[in-house]
Image (cartoon, rainbow, N blue to C red; front, side, top):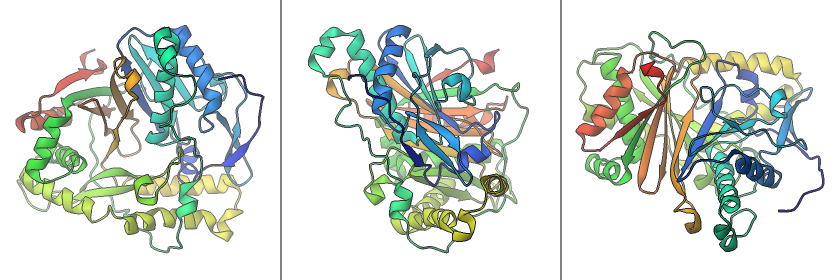
Amino acid sequence: MGKKAKKTNWQKLDNTANLFPAIATHTMTNVYRISVDLDEEIDRKILQKALDMILPEIDTFNVHMRKGVFWYYFETNNKRAPFVEIENDYPCRYIEPYPNNNYLFRVTYYKKRINLEVFHVLADGMGGINFLRELAYQYLRIKHPELAQQERDGLSDATSLNTEDSYLKNYRKSHAKGYKTARAFEVKGEKLFAGELGVIHGIMPLEDVKKVCKHFGVSINEYLVGVMTYSIYCECLHKQLSARPVVTCVPVNLRPFFNSMTTRNFFVMVSSLFEADKDDYTFEEVLAKVKDSLRSQINKEHLEELFSYNVSNQKNIFLRFVPFFIKKLAMRFVYRSSAKAGTTTLTNIGSIDIDDAYKDYIKRFYTMISVSTGQNIKGAVVSYNGELVFTFTSILADVSVQRCFFSLLAQHGIEVTIESNGVYYE
């Protein structure tokens, strides 16, 4: 990859991205992390060189954000790539643009692990996977000359460079709101010290999970949401009646439904709703409710309704020319109201594919998401090379929900290995 001449392009934020700058704070960062474990210790200088090489090739990440009169917008960032640092703080922290050369992502490393943290305004999980995968490939080509002889510099064929706003492209006129705003049950308790984030990974054979899902007649997502819901029902509601439902927000990747390859955000949230209207629900009963709730929503027509409602607000001629500071106040108010409608979030970024030449060097992937208003505990899932990794992030000191979750997996015959960032042992 040769050195490119400086360029300055600009583009609007996608429909979902417009929300994130309005609501992001140091305590609600809207930052997610995807990590890759290699089979060797990371060399910082080589990782920096790899980042310097690939960043100009990926327009989705090679930007800074500017504030316009009516909306934020992206502009090409011609500054040097962010400085790669050894990990020395908690994950998913707020990304300060100024000391980061105005970039909206960070790259850190620790021992054999490379971490990519992304402000959600840039991209969803697919965009993050694209970038981290190419960063790992370039790092390995520099580190291993024998690999560089087999694999050319440049982006792999599997990496999309599409930056279209697929929300706008697939928008259909809609007046249906689609989202529920009734208040959900909130998982509360003693919190960790300010700034701390507790992380627990559960690493398990993907085949074990598939067998259990086949037994229950559900998908992997439905099963994991069911286990999460049941764990909250057991540990927080103590299997008793509740006036407020346990609501698990589930991001749905829209690309397969609308034939999109965009590397920007293209997802909507659906909600699994479980109402504890009697005592002593069994796991099977909870799972059946979760399954029915999700399946009734995950279809093209309903998903189209959800994002079309949001886009229709953006396109409203009366709202379009309202100054941004007023829009920002309105979006914060609407977000705070809607945030109370969720108990937790469980996101599954799917299975990551790696080119054959690199498979011997890449051992495992992890992903995690930051907590948010009303959601003090969340889950994230990624699969690679026959393994599924489920990661809890939480700002609560109590880990009874996580313990119940992994215990239930073990009871179903899934062998789970636990890792933690050590917060709960300090």
